[in-house]
Length: 233
Image (cartoon, rainbow, N blue to C red; front, side, top):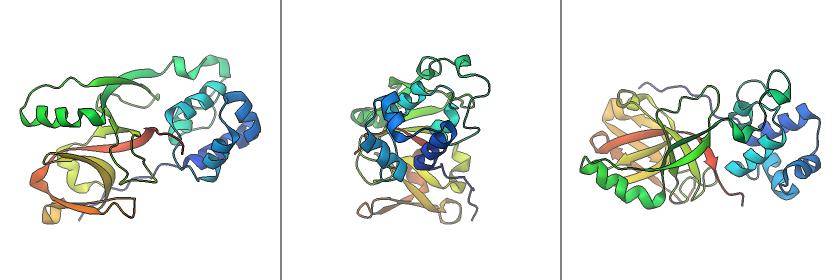
């Protein structure tokens, strides 16, 4: 059985620590510059809150435009933008792009349209586009339920990309899987599509359980790239 090797995203606690070290500032200074409370910032830094909401990252990005957007969102590349901070201006004004958005309330319409081979016009949602990101196959999905908690909470918005069918048997990680008349977001550990024609999906929540589905029941798969927006608890 072949498994693709993927590099897990860096915890935001590490990203934030690197930003603080690079800028030589404290959480108190970040609170002053962004308006984010020191309590939520401390929980992000400690890892108690693993995933910041989109607005939280945007506030940090707007306050410190010298920070590389790819690093702030995904932990990739250099921490600082090359050149002076004034070369990119306000982060929130430059890299926004609208992508299709599948909300919880649209799940039913999406499934019905797929099964009847009719076109469904999804809503669009503005997201931050990084320099390396191709937006052609991106879909923003609102998460229904707490099966992936604490990694992903109910109501969070996750940025996904459609997976080619020919690669389904080799993938692992967190995926949105459309099978039968259901859309679920779970983790793929044992991928047995090539060997036994089945796929087992796991919850990060210990109470979430697992589900095993047959290859013939799978209609679409989207790889979860990142948690784009999530409330801080």
